[in-house]
Length: 452
Image 1 (cartoon, rainbow, N blue to C red):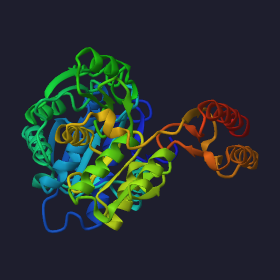
Image 2: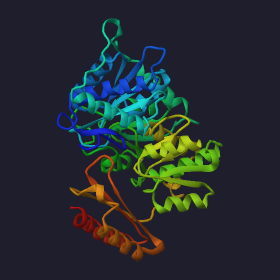
Image 3: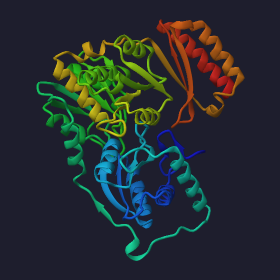
């Protein structure tokens, strides 16, 4: 797998790349590294462990729990809950560590492990590097220092987790959702119970699809990566809007009442204006990645809101927000972080706040989202190439330069290696969709030629 930790934890095919032995070893390593860092000093450590509904999550959860308990960490097992719920509960319960087992929007055979530090924040890169180093050291034979007797960790189910998280979500809304019919696509994932309960409790009339997880159907033709079913359901039920989550519900995409997609950039734009109205948009600034549509940047400039851009990955958006005390940030993919109420992207919270804006203004989501015009953007994933050479290939650099000269000031090019998959992403924006497709296609061919 190369370096174990990517931009969003450790991921791979469960029981092939990501084995029970690895899950156990990484958990023990995490406990030791955090103990060395002084996180556990002066008290008995506690961890919150949750998962999405993937079948492989059952044995991986068992391995993680065993590893933590064997290292002297007490474990609160919260079961199937969204990633942001595990992050929230880690902070709300004063736990020293949170662990989420999920591969987010990836297909069912994959799984992943994500660690949260005290407070529910993602671990710093240097801590992940140290965990990986310690794991490798002990995997090759160095013995662990193991507690015995009363020193081993205790394990119990924390069944109150869902209720505590739902109450938190509903409690932060600026207004109720009464009168709105909303279709929720839960991707047969971790929010299948949480999201409908929160929207219903907030006053919405809820229609659900993709809310019957069986361990095998997560993200299968539904959720934020497959919006066609949601688009059809919104129109069929005459709903005001639709909300789609991914498998671990840390992202949210939307559909307006006509069945048109509202992406993460548009959601950010709507929420930025709403938060500024409530004086909640600190420094009148929103944080987004370099993948954001150029139309989003232009809309924010027109509205007098400053845009700060980061590298791709919600962890980098979050780092910038925490460092500069900004309140709102996110990605085009639907990871939206509202830092006053969440420490990571929270798809259910995002959807609730988007619906609250519709209910509070009496305007349609289509009208609200029209604050920005999406410029044509084409994204091509190029698999089976050496993604490590994206920045060093002279051949590829020449092709990018040629494309940029063709587009001029009316578009842009972005090539980047995926942080979670073995591929290179080619993104091209242009004033004309045909030009964007043509340039993107040529660059995808250039990536294959130069890096294949």
